[in-house]
Image 1: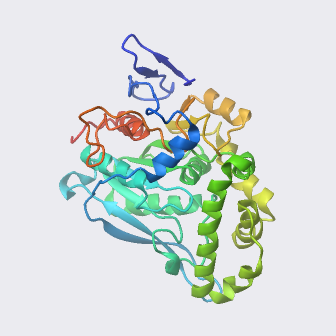
Image 2: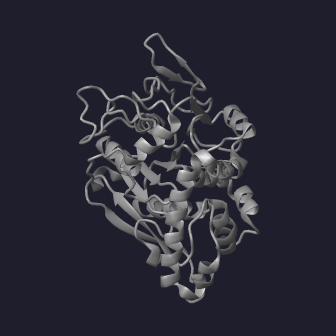
Image 3: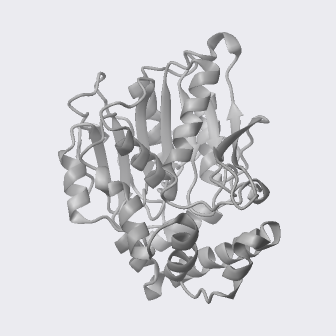
Length: 374
């Protein structure tokens, strides 16, 4: 089921626009039909992560932004953004897309690169944001990243608006990155930056408590093991770089991601415990309060992202939100069959099979009033 949407006579999805949207949203994409042999959420998720893509983007400009002050004589904490700017004479009026990755991803994640290539081809500016410690920046961050660091995104927004006097920006977040940008949107309340034209969450981690529990289900232990192995490795690296802060944490047994959240995230993120962390940072708290056109894409066969009925109902009732829920798609995957002549390994196109990327590009172009290359 896809909600809210209805097929027209051509079979395309008609996405109902928010009542407050300044521009009507036409049929943006055809309906999502999962790629042959990938009708299972686990298969979609794994293929989305490991299916090779040979996409190149231009060398970026590196931008370092301080997001936290010194701690125990270490620091300050900086994050790294990889920026792709259109020529100076058109940069200010072109939409700027800020892309935020998910847990243990980076500015080099496949979906970030795919969206970057697509947005650049459409004439947009692109900023690929790394969360704290990600993208090879452990040495720049004595503090840790987690699902509540929405203030980091706010500092990226403020910095690029100040430096480039941009007319329109769009926030795009995947999974944990989706929670960050949606949390920030809620925190903006009734006074978001006037340049913020749209916010897009793909498989966003909005309800952390049930999603954390789902990650520990037997069918999902492969994902939990993958994340936990990477987080343990990162903790060991932190202990080498910042021994006064993290050496003692190495003695803590960490067998599940909840253990990590309980003993590491809560401790170093200043939460009472894991439950306090999950409740405090969940963007679902703001689902009724979004005041910028927002696209949220969620699949009911996502292996470990769970959306509570109250969150779903709040999104559906919010006139600023276009909520699309599909039966298939897995986690951040949404792989459809490519057209026979679409060389999906070497280019991006509307027919390359990366359905979510095509959807979000068309949505942001509609909301910013931008056409390809204009």
